[in-house]
Length: 94
Image (tube, rainbow, N blue to C red; front, top):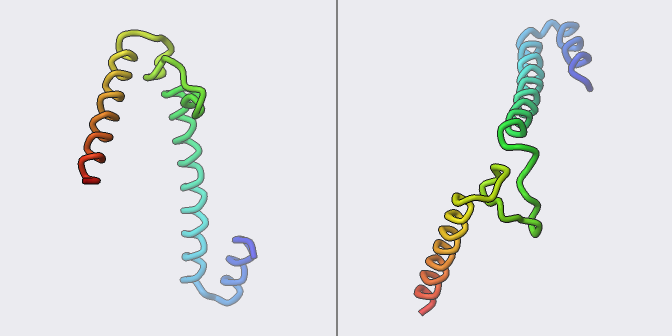
């Protein structure tokens, strides 16, 4: 049953509480859906279309449109963090 039919049924049954519950639910669903669409739209405007697909990464780590010193810094930092995690995991296996 769609929302309009459900509301009409509650009106015919003279059930104002269920009318309000149905209206609240429908309004919440529509607002939530629209907010999610806006969030995605804003994220695309701010961050560009998307991140690099897995397996197709490029040298532009921070996705700012150019390869520069910050990308090198991030690459080295991620590599160091990966080594530290690997070393820590090896230590726990003993």
